[in-house]
Length: 452
Image (cartoon, rainbow, N blue to C red; front, side):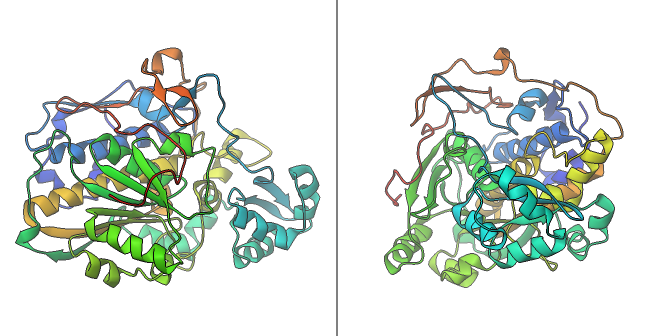
């Protein structure tokens, strides 16, 4: 099945056209989610890109690489199916879309400090019904600015045309899907991967949280990486952890303390890949700018993520998938095309998931380049740039109902998670030379030692 994103995605990996044979890639089962954008094609293309890069690190290539688009679509959502227990609700009680006096705004309050910031502007409310009239008294742009300035997360709903005229989208449109930099090169960095999986023996230090980064490192863990996730001591994400901690050891560190920074420095020295999703300059402000990281480890592959892009006036703004959908016109387009009375986002958090798989592909491609040529690469990605890619695929009709999860889509294997038994959606990617098995079952955050 032809995929409208595949060639553009692969063009983000320099020279890759000389190293892969796309005739070995088969994207099958063209079912798709009901969406005003080609979300399912984005799902299959992003997972395929990571699969192709994983195959590059296997030595001899697979004779075939199979993607099931139906299953790929479901892996853009929550895949875990608990048995006799429940995952907590995904949203804080006051998170969501609100009407202001002149339009719509979305508040993202899942993190306690983001909730405090929003309520410091709006007042002390505990539920949406009580908060609604308070939001309605504000003008949308003024409220967005006030909450962001207070350290919170909010986004006004813009139309696609408004976003395209915005200086931020103009900047993002000039950024590549994957922004590469050759940091250094040394023949001493060349090595062969003789393990049974593409990432065998590779140490990945994971400083990411909801949701793109954890998707990336979950993929890397599936293909052999030793993933160590580091979270602040006061952080938790109970509704997401069962989904994205699969395959990882999870530890806690206070990077604002001398002891925490010392431990983290030792971890960096022995890491092969660092994946982080802090806002631009945030990691540097804790004492780990790029120069420091490469002094600690000259061979480190650095894969980083931000929300709104790496240039432009909003480059340092806090953001999440649902906020970027509001900003860039996706939610407005869905509302208009659905003739709805409120914003209509994508059926899944596709910007997060697609960017996550692109990040995994970037880590695998960089590992390949280091092993083959001794090059040390860094890569930067953003949710806004992934949105720019997806928005090329807007539709003027909607095929309903779209694919729905059924029993046949669930793997028979029982997963012994840290919360109870569960099953997962079947994995959508098949490399004929590599069987997928995660080394660690999903479990709570901050339960492992911060050590390799």
